[in-house]
Length: 349
Image 1 (cartoon, rainbow, N blue to C red):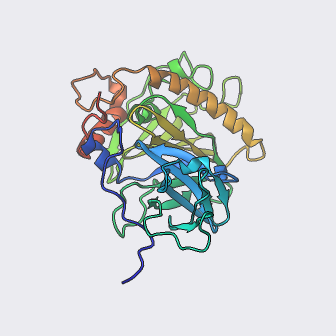
Image 2: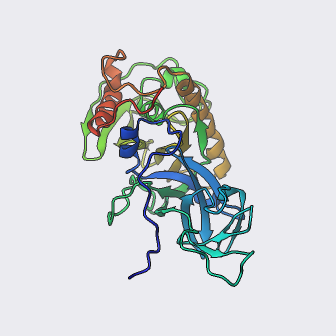
Image 3: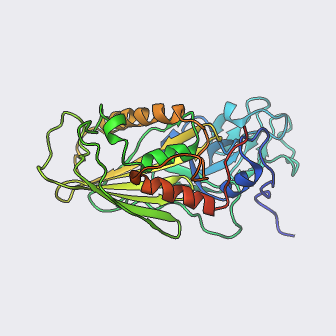
């Protein structure tokens, strides 16, 4: 009988889940980022996805995503240390390798660990400077991760911003990223224009994975105070939404300059979202990356304040629960897409 290198993924909803069980089962089939690759250093990284505690570590050069609990006495492995051969538990020094199996027991160094002495591992993919995983992957299926325009194109700089935690639901955050009517009110300290609030008509076109929308307007994307505008220039913002919680925005600057932002809203729980934002650009590539980090942090903080104040906390999928305006084409397409996935209201009260 062949040795099973990876234990079967348990079929359960995490203890204390904030999601409706049926919604959780649907969401758990999708891929989400859980850590920055550059975070993986001298210590394991503890995190959470869909209320499931996870630890991210390296073992023999391989990135591993596993359940954050030692099977010996229940201590989080993220409290431990990182070695070349795997993660080491802080309680008794048990070490777990790339396949999740315990490969060293200091108290019994000459004895092999029992088969039960292993952690559940999940698939791990490195892309866009992020570690992606899926809690309930389909057997034999390739990872389904949102493509990012221009990331690997010649002349484009690859930037992975620090993540930011938002105490709100991922669906609310995503809807805000797709919204084009809030620039003149939420982002007036970064790039918005308080005197340019009109939203020209646009359409959201359904795709196999979500939808896309081309939005043309005179609202620029340069930071406030930076005079680089071209009079009469119409800016194209090309949104691509990949359900449930990832989208990209390609902004067409004057000439051939392009800025691409990925909005990957990773649902820590139904009430906390960890936002990851890889960025690609083919201009100002000689400028300090910290400038990009700082500017986008300011933009994220502006959106964060709104998302954390919204009520209800969940994203209503019944169109009669909230009023709508013509500028909400993307929002309505997004909500319809989530409802078509079979989702309901996302979390229990």
